[in-house]
Length: 366
Image (tube, rainbow, N blue to C red; front, top):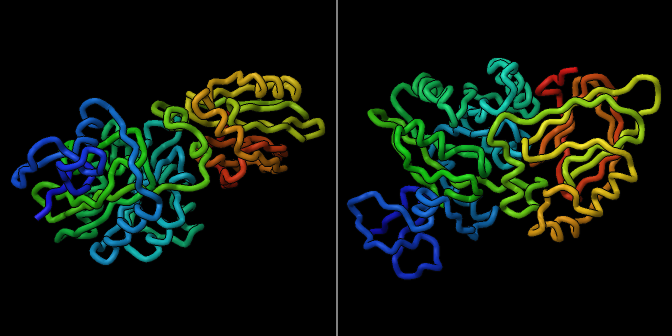
């Protein structure tokens, strides 16, 4: 009989410290135990890179599909398109679901939870998905967590086994911990913390929730950065926003990561707002100065550790028009929302980064 880590679900072993599941302790099958990796993450914040691939994660999740009746996908409202993975959408078309939208605390306070829910409902409908219900939560302060339990209890009064799914870093393990009332599942800011499916029971109920490995999304700008820089793209406080009213040939830079040149020509100046993590600098300049800033690595992201890797990634230029009330999302970074348009830009972005145009989530202010 084997013993698994209660934090990440991997099978424990004490033979080889270089392999997954290692613990220096004697394996006691009668007590809860963590592997060394989870123990160091939990107590010291020390991160050890795991070697699982996207296919490994998909295999773990797919093994549960026939066992569970309910799927609870968790989406990050700030990086919504980055957590809106195609494999997750396919699952939602097959199974009953209660959608959880996390990180409410990071959006501006003038956006009411009901507005968020309506926007998400419409976005899901575009993909042909009709969930049983939607829960808007913040694992940081606990807002809305009890609502998840109430919704599960409403649809499954006699109990159910469900699986909590999502891409990396959306807060699946944090939600499990909140619902269970214990800090069991390993939580960290790094991707790929949960390695295997782990069943957790909500106390005094017949509701069991599987914590699953986070699917690895594709097409994010953070994929071309080192772990430290990638973490800077993930907001830890309310997102930063800045509104621009500018003219033709002005250049807007999001650090040295993404830039776009304004192509609008005419009397009416477009008004638009940028949204991203507070770690991402916004800068307006002219064409020549933008070239100088890029050449001299003026911004600290990408940093020295990942700058060469990032610069070697082929860049592409795209001409895009965004109408009033629309947004252009740079997957894994942020978005631009147009208040008065249309806004026509020449965008320079690493090849392979997904772009999404959508109805505005947050209306920019003048």
